[in-house]
Each structure stands twice: as C-alpha cells, then as structure tokens.
Image 1: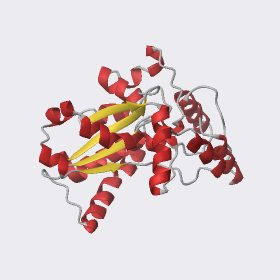
Image 2 (image 1 turned 120 degrees about the vertical axis):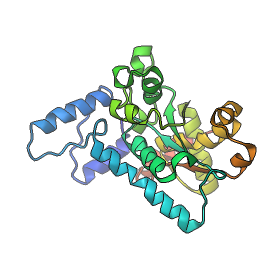
Image 3 (image 1 turned 60 degrees about the horizontal axis):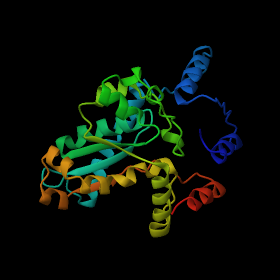
Image 4 (image 1 turned 60 degrees about the vertical axis):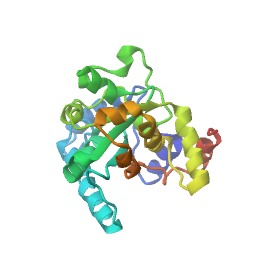
Length: 250
C-alpha cells in the first residue's frame, strides 16, 4: 500500500484515492469492476493490458538512442545487464520486451523482487503464472517496497516473457533500506525502497560464477559489460517520508 505521503499528495491534486485492506490483486479487481459500470471511466489494467505493455516497450529504442549518443557500445563483446524491479509485471515486462527487440541477445534482463513478494519468480518457475500466489506457499506478501507488494503476477506478462528473461533474484527490505541510504550519501540520489530493488543486481551477477557459466559469459565480456539499474521513482516522495526511509538504513 502506498505511504501516507503519496496518498496525501494525490489527494492534494484532486485525485480520489480508494483504499482496500486486501492486497494488490483484489484492489485491481475491484477497480476493474468499478470501471466497467462507468462509461466515462478508462481503466489502466497493469495485469492484462497489451497496450500498456507495448507502451513500456518503447523504452528499448529510447535507451538504444541514448547509448548511441553517449558512445556506449552494446554487442557480443560488450553485453548489457538490466535490473528491473518487478511487481505484477506489466512495467518491467514491457521494458524487457523492448530491450530485447532493441539489443537482442546482447542484453540480459533480470527481475528483482522482495523476498516476501516473489510473485513473478514463483509464477514463471512453476509454470503456473497467475494460477498461483505467494500466499499459497505461506509467504505473507508484506514488504516496504509498496510498488512491488504483489502476491499474484500477471499471467499475460509471465507467459510472454518467460523465455526472454535471463534471471530473477530476491532481496529483503533491510537491504533496500541500506542501499537507499548508501545511494543518498554517495550520489545524493533519493529513491523509494521499490526503486532500490534493482541496485543489488550488479553485485549479484558479478559474484555468481554459476550464472556466468550458464550464460556462457567470459571474464573479458564481464569486464566490458554495462550494468543498468532501472530505478523506478523517489523524486515525489515527501521529505518526511524520505527521512523515515533514510533512518532505517544501516
């Protein structure tokens, strides 16, 4: 559930914020039903919208143009690793799809999820996709990474991307808080916990000899690689709420 600061900011702009005690999937279902009864309402479906998925995919060509302008080479000898925080999957799935179209096999896309909400990893690994939820395994789906607090992944995204994704990893809330503090201190970049999920990726990939072997990556390729963390937000987090995040870092 979004923090109080975010909800207050939305309400200050005239947005009607409807809250549910249940998790993300129930909230989306209720929103979908409400939209169906209102002819003037357009429901943005993060679970099953091909339009939204393809909209996110535009990021691939945009990034390719930015890299070309910066002189950043991406090819077989200079692989690109992209670490994407994943909730229900629509955003990171679309971005990863666009990246694969833009860079082909030279880009490695990895999804990052909270240890208490690994819905896409669970859906893809079991092959059950949206037919299984983390709660079915006794996982509580409680995490400070509110944008990633999803118990059941998008079946559409999971089925579309399962053969294109290069890996998953999970991390706990404290690790996200720690990295939030480190990034703020070292670079003066302030992100919300959800946005930090991807930040653990470079260390995980560089340290995993098993992953290097599985992907056929040489030491030279790894030394010449580009690592990109998809940081999803933080600039609009109220100062008071950000201070609370920073206080939890070690």
